[in-house]
Length: 448
Ligand code: GLA
Image 1 (tube, rainbow, N blue to C red):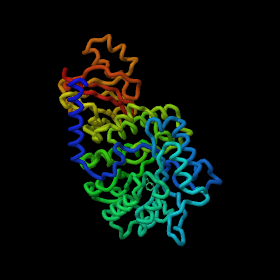
Image 2: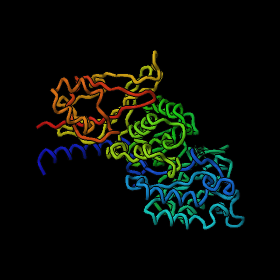
Image 3: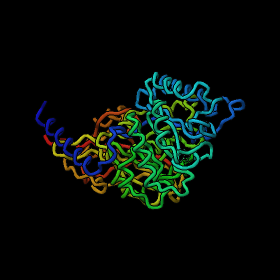
Image 4: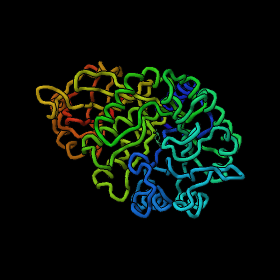
């Protein structure tokens, strides 16, 4: 291995080790990068009448169909692996004698071991919803209160790989005690299960120091809806708490802003790009909620964009933040691999136009920024990924003209090639659609 590569790898390992030390938390060895998968709630809610709504009801057939599509439509190949049942899967009462939870007999006639095997045979993983309190959030079935050990064992017997534990109906329950206690019961089963906690969402002043010791991911924001304002609200919520949130996330434990709503009814193409880019910047779990059979081809391409998923799954696991916000304009930055041979990060950068910029809120806007203002300090510069078609044009132009042309370059959503060198003092220009984003990777250049 060349000496520079060796140094660079060593630096990366040291930085990663330091980062891990600073955010050390739950070590069940799971979720080293944010989990990717699918969950029905935002799209399919709590539809239980399978006679009237056979395609939409929460049933064995919805999950089998989705398992098939995750594989046949190429989603599993790019990393979407957890197929998670949300609320409304249970019988309304526990078993009269054993007190075990039971899946609804009509909608899951072959039981959860059958479904779990089906999902595992597809090479996917199986997730299941539960609630720490008295009832599930839709007031549907019994919560775990009083039955932590039994429910953890039942989940292990069903070969569950991922538990989403909600926090409704918690009168007289101290979440700071209950969530760790349930987590310990999961661990006692000996079956590795990703532990997704809604814990902080139900508290005014969450103790993230404690939460990260017990959970692989945690919800910090309201339930997302299939609308741009809901995505924007979640982003703003993160921004307000980012000092705290970024401190605690890292390999094994992640901030969860809720599901990806791409592929449904209300997000435009640009807003779909925006949700995906920001979720990747903040190292969020990418859990889709949609009907995989009806996702439009353009949105499917977005969801399967390897460059974006690579940012989300960056091995350093450092969550990004919003570094600039003014009017309609936001800039979000995440340090990512690779390091150069003197230890400077690369960066993923999302330029956001929320779309309320007067005098023309619904027009594309041009933004200019001197990269140093984003915290870029590598004097050797950064290579930017742009589209192949424009690469040819760019090679023919002199450097200063290249910068003038930056605004027409495609971003990580286009086909890619590393091109162009930008130094910290250089101005970067990009044009962003309303309720949209442009998304670039700035790769730090090595000293030769
Ligand atoms: C809460 C959660 C949602 C979903 C529903 C199910 O609202 O935040 O993600 O699980 O409960 O009832």
